[in-house]
Image (cartoon, rainbow, N blue to C red):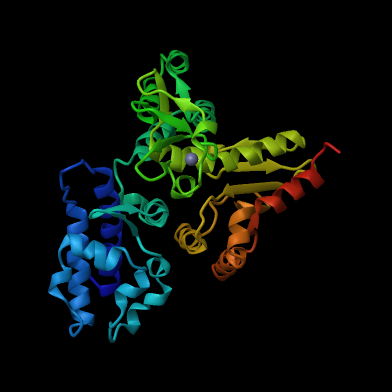
Length: 370
Ligand SMILES: [Zn+2]
């Protein structure tokens, strides 16, 4: 195996290991992630090979690896590496990542959003058993209309009452796969919490601040008395965190496009052919457009995904569009260019990356509602 492949495996193991470790955190106990340790070992063997002078055996332990490496931008991990040109480090998707974890004090850490995004978009296949996969695998075994109905339901109902959950299960009482999907999607709310005004999931009060499914929700300042409270063990259910983060949150963008099409009388199908892409739009003149809504904040992650997938799946469309939220394009003004350059490079002439704003404009102008 070549060193670059080894390094990629190490990064995947380290990132998923950190994530796994945080998920298993129990007060007073120390959880060893075999993945993380395996990843550290591979990384350190390469570190020793490329940077024998700067190699420090004391940084081998899990805890010191976390403070000496994981808490620093990934590009800094390679300081002092020599003769590593052929690895083309600067071109690797992990190289541009900021610190993987943040310091929560008292020898604890929290995984940053970029870690989770990396797992979702780059390492998806090796993460078995994370919550969204358990749901997604069930959904994929349903027929098209059940698939659309249930996926839409999850996106629109991040928090539900027990009675609503029972109604939903009754509706699918003859369908064991759908029941399994529902079972895998929701969990009972055990502790007091608040409804997150940003994403609709739950805000849990912590020693400092609140915690939601993504760090961007958690970092917002809230006024407690203005938040809607949910009492623990009061028969309320919520989506499991992974389901919220990777099915419901991106789903909002998909539904927004779907609803906008409906409003402007543009024919559209959600998740055609069991999620071949997110939405297929047919304009009144017959032009078909395939849409993939991408709520990926980091353009290099989307670029990597585009390259891996070879652009869009084939289909009978005139244009294929990756649509990103306007704020991502505002935050990174080179976002669209990064993706469109890659699409051009791999010869995808009818595929583009655009902002939601531009897609809406086209729908509005070409729709039937004037
Ligand atoms: Zn939230």
